[in-house]
Length: 116
Length: 110
Image 1: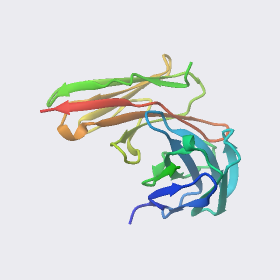
Image 2: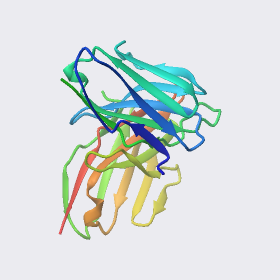
Image 3: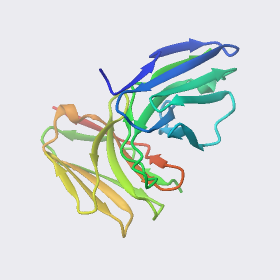
């Protein structure tokens, strides 16, 4: 069993659809992240949650809405997306040691999203 | 200027070669440094942390130069399986900021 599990692995959705991406971590970490990786572009940090509170939101459009019900689960709710939102969405987790410095992050396998 | 900069490559090297990657960062308050490896269409995976004193893991050596604000990765005796994209990662306080470099592509050929 992998430490960080994402579902679904692949998703095709229309621009008017609403869908959710799910992430679950089995590592006992207390911080979780959503990253976006578009083709030929570096990883972009979207959201950070630590102890279930949102710590950072890098000016992500409101059509992306995160939810963190507990320290093991993270969702990314999607609605009225655009074709340019097609990308690999990666979830990651790490352990906050209390000094607000990131430890190394462990990634899920990602959800490859295509918006048509 | 990007916060973390890497030469995108690609680096094309023969098996057995030694190859080195550098990465520069702009925030002097950066605290933690890592090298990740990402295979095509896969998630990034931690390769090694980078410590101030430098550290080695088998054929891989990582070094940090805080004065010049760069980190390096040296791969000795390259294997075909080392072909991947190597990502430089820098973190600093304040909102759990984690910055990934764009990555350096490495191709090791027989």
